Image (cartoon, rainbow, N blue to C red):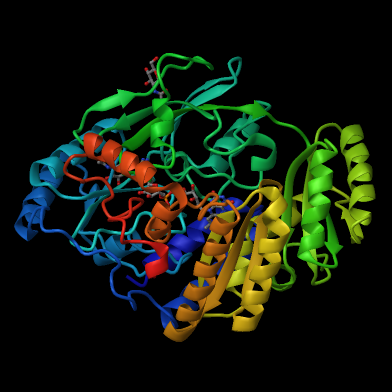
Length: 530
Ligand SMILES: Cc1cc2nc3c(=O)[nH]c(=O)nc-3n(C[C@H](O)[C@H](O)[C@H](O)COP(=O)(O)OP(=O)(O)OC[C@H]3O[C@@H](n4cnc5c(N)ncnc54)[C@H](O)[C@@H]3O)c2cc1C
Ligand SMILES: *[C@@H]1O[C@H](CO)[C@@H](O)[C@H](O)[C@H]1NC(C)=O
Ligand SMILES: *[C@@H]1O[C@H](CO)[C@@H](O)[C@H](O)[C@H]1NC(C)=O
């Protein structure tokens, strides 16, 4: 058991960053991981969902495991090793209690997934897909009454690259960073612009409806980046949602049905991705007197039509964490700051930088710094993307509750100001990062024990309530998982949630796929009752 967490964390770190920086992040991840093992560990709270009795019994699980072992000749395909079971039902990156799965199957093809689903169907056992394991709302937690976890992490092949069509076909376990690295290595000037957590995979990205820093320029998983997906349904049937043509108006959009479904409707095994032209980029950073002023500046920058790829707000504690644990050699003033990423030719980037600098100065920006070379730009960006890990390291041994909400852009200054005040008054160590061009921001709230966890729970709840009151959403990009289920009725309305449930019931009548996630149990299961 203790072996598995550091390995997962270590696996996260080195892929992300250039070789010279990776040792540092690996050490950071390791110290955070071992700190958490010795400190605030898992399973303190009671399980959030009660297992209904309609699933198979313990002996059904035993029989299913036997059949799974018989179905796959490779002795490593089916694991009941304690460390593996927990590592697939737990995450160092979130606050949910860990629950081990009953068995983990390492699939390598659509056919492997079909076999698992057929056996699960025979014995009526819950199935939870797992790909990158980076999601933050308990999305892949085991079902408390027992579950079969299907790992697609090994299904990471790129199957076809169609440069002339600007698309690519891959397996669901392919990581977005590896896809972009492979395109670069082959000298193909295209990239896939959705950028959630380092190590996230296409299957998980589709299933959480992810986005990331590039969303202000390229949109989210809900834009048309997924052209066609191959899906194994709860019955074991395999479908495709479309063909490879870039456009189609043949019926309604079934690809979208699986976007944000969190593995509750089907297991994605392959996907055709649309690619975007790869452009040169550079990064600038500046500081503001307050976060609210920063967001006001961004609003004017966006309406000016400046060519931005990303615009990210970070708070003083984030800068403190990066200064302590990041890769950039240059240290930055601990103030509310904005990272800008510009794209295009050198001339365009220079012009944009000038234009943006003039605008932000009107809002009290200071310390404007444009990366002087590619390495500096990439280090700065790595520091932004690694914020979760550098922030967790602010208190060795602490766990973190990362939450995200999204509001209409004009309401962002007030919700950020109120949230900052609330956190300060609660005396909790935290960092704030925001994809502010989309009105989306995150807080990472650190806690060391049950008492602090309860304070953090209250902070998160109030942040969501504020967002809903401002016509916003309880989750801009992390998805619902276990953590946000209780807000869906309030946010979407009874008719909408019940329509989601009706679709779920039609596709998965025995509620086998990722039960207990996404759909609130009933109308009484609401945020107000927290
Ligand atoms: C450091 C860090 C930064 C992050 N930044 C962002 C960010 O900027 N934007 C953002 O959106 N998210 C962010 N995240 C969250 C996370 O990266 C995303 O939620 C991501 O989309 C999850 O992908 P995954 O492959 O890790 O999925 P997993 O965690 O493996 O799974 C996610 C969900 O999808 C289901 N699932 C997995 N694979 C499949 C499949 N093949 N078919 C059907 N269902 C499946 C799982 O059961 C689970 O419910 C961040 C996370 C970390 C750790
Ligand atoms: C898939 O491949 C991995 C790595 O080779 C192997 O460990 C695993 O057992 C394989 N799974 C199946 C179902 O054959
Ligand atoms: C997409 O559609 C084609 C049929 O035109 C199908 O062969 C393919 O497997 C589908 N899936 C993916 C992921 O492209």
